Length: 372
Picture 1 (cartoon, rainbow, N blue to C red):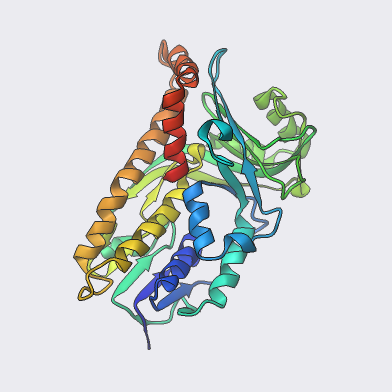
Picture 2 (cartoon, rainbow, N blue to C red; picture 1 turned 180 degrees about the vertical axis):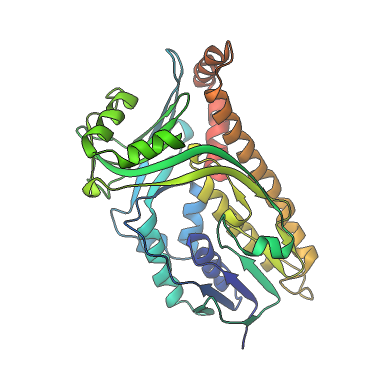
């Protein structure tokens, strides 16, 4: 039986990042991995903020990504569902080089897998291996099987929506501009991504009612592209499907665990909390968990083991506010733009326009997103 300081269950982006971050701080780590389920091409793209990029730089993964796997976002344009409903953010206004990076999920996972394979102090093992460790970190995603056994009840609300992902090529350059449309009943995001076509590629994340999502996932390429043209009004040029027209979808929900830590165990990432992807902050929250947990464990009193309940309570307290705030923001925005109550349409679009003219408020909102 292997003995180590921390056993990490789940070898996705969050689990592997946690293994590397803890190993860099001198912890002996077991990373327990399950065989990946058979699936088609991974069409996911993630918007990583400055804090997430800094974490990946610390564990020496960021520089190892393929050159076209990360595309900087220089500007963000948000469109409402009526005239005057618009909001823009730019990197120069925030005095940063970029607002975020759009990163290929498959490339990031592959680079992390290579890193943990050769990392000192990280032991990569099959998921069914028994490990003796004072702390077990569960990074096994939104469908974590450990939560119930640990008494960490997960409260979930399903939105009745599906996120549709695809890769697109535009007829005009993206210019580092990310675009997002908030409407009833959908939210559409075009994320500049050079991994599709340098200067002209996008990652699509389109949140739609389940029935409409099923229709578009089953539609032929021409029908899907017509729907995109109607939804974006040509703002990004003519959009065509890449990757052989492949599309993927997954159900959306809001969820959180009633407890994220206890004696000898902790939940990290989607195992602890799930938010709507409209703000692109789900993975940033998970990597924020990683950075916080590693720091709290490294700064604990020498006589306390990593699984000490008081140590883990510090992590839980520190992460409570950021995760609750992001859940509140994403859920509130979704319901505001889905509402058909009298006056709601005018209120939400006037609100976007008002924020766009309040520079201090825009800077505060952008700073929060960059550092979550």
